[in-house]
Length: 307
Image (cartoon, rainbow, N blue to C red):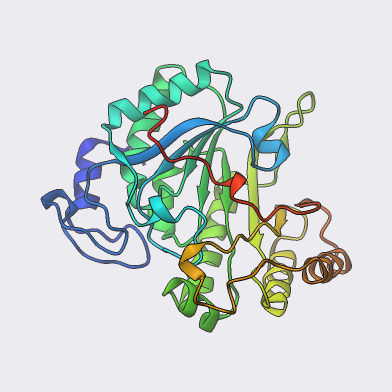
């Protein structure tokens, strides 16, 4: 689909971009669940070294962190930008320039982080950037709480999809993300991502991903049963035609201090059980994390760098 400013305006005037379907007029300054108007807002654009090895490589991923979020998990590691506390308004033209600047800095790819609520603006900027010489892969990094019809705006513009699959249980997703329909919506979104990109393609010389889907799953404390259901679904649906990244880096931050279930790290024993389960399932294309990874060092400063 060709994306123009009229496309952007049509989506923004009655917003149904994501499953929340807030039906607000963001062009008029109204905000829905994501907390954002039609003004494109970001918090940071810089080289980022803490993604999977095939994404970050040796030079870093050109990560652009957008402000606001349509999911807003209670334990969010990027809490300040998710609630819109950090951010700077930029134009679609400036976003195009930022992508080209990151490419000039040697970024392995352009990594669009939590941009669901700005998909039309992102698609417009990407289309322009590619016409101006953007040639490195584009990564769409998302919670996967998406609508397939909106993701189709990105077809042919995004090379790598990096979605989460956070929960299987509707009760857990309702409690943590105010979204009882999360699994239904996220699994449909991942199916659309896979349709667009197909099986993973890696550069034989660098090991960097050129195309494909990596699904991330972050273990939550005390929720190994739900994690196993997520992994079983992914393997039964896609086999080894996607990568699966099983993460133990959950970091309890200030906002969950009064929630005993979430106010602790994932134990080594919990993580080990899930990894053994993944191996028994036959998951071969994937990533796991070694040692102590729960740390705020994974959370960059959202200080407007690069904007």
